[in-house]
Image (cartoon, helix red, strand yellow):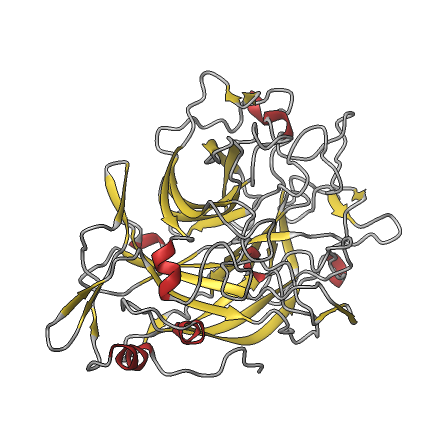
Length: 515
């Protein structure tokens, strides 16, 4: 087992040393200025906490709900020998591992998926995979500013293992750009496990290519993985064997001018998902067994070829309750993404199911450490509701000839989801409490640019049963000056650690679906 960070003292001791006071009772309470959002008559809260000492003195925190921070060093390598980057593409908490200790901390295991490997100079033959990372989380509710090194002790991460993914006939998957199409298997679509037409690297290297962007861990140890190339959703066994493939409607599939599948990510297709704008978001309603996926931005026919017209993306839902049948599409809705001050779309990189009709959405710019600019202006876990929105599945809009929007304007007769701002990752006071910052200088304490994952875990607080910890992790694009990929070393001219943030939020009604 490889240890990423050394074992640390639990937060209670950390808080004691920082405050110079007796070990406190950590008790988040309603404060004067938390971020409150009302949606469908319910109030959602990004908590501001109180730090209550055993002598009954109380210290208010003026920041928002950031309560934890951790990282994986940029040069860390997995058990295969490759640099372990890109893992913020998708995370989940392995079923049955989340627990609270007697000391007030929490333990669990993250399952994380990297995307297609280090590809700054072109895509590579990187086998799709997932990693397990054990963690000890000791939430920090104090008002004093932690040093960058002490802040990392609030989320202690330990690498556990890696599972490689394989396709049919135990063939290795690849991260290469798909330049060819494999015919559908015999029996498709009636046979539940028969594959549709599949993206492959080339006719000479006919391996399934995957650019993984979302992950859901199932109770039986299997996993759903959403992909950018297809954009498809794949079900893998606990040992990484392909079980099933979900193909979205024609309106989502990348097609050329002749209506043929065009999987390459080198340029945009004529219709369907844009280049590198596939099914970034993946989540599940565990109670009702409904799998949801969302495109990063609008399809090409809906305006996805330009940043200022790509706002209206699509959320899709499949019933995955019966593994003996091909999951049927049971819902499809339009979600309006937030806009920048220049009216460009802040694209969505992850979603998470809260309760029926309500979701979290991680929308952001590309700025921060490793990004285009150091000053991030929008990195948020927002909320949206499809209650009252128009369900367009099975309608003419599943045909690419019938777009849902034109020139950035939604077609009449379609009611979109309701989208509201919620958790700001770059909130200044919160970052400063954990030794982090936004904008210059571009050092290791600068917030990462690409945040692409969300996971929820209950606080297990009987006084606040609707409180959850919201975990998020960054995709560092494998950027390190000491990298290793497919047996060859590389230098990306920058070190970008994979950062994790944790917030405490109140999500009324979420408990039955996120336990």
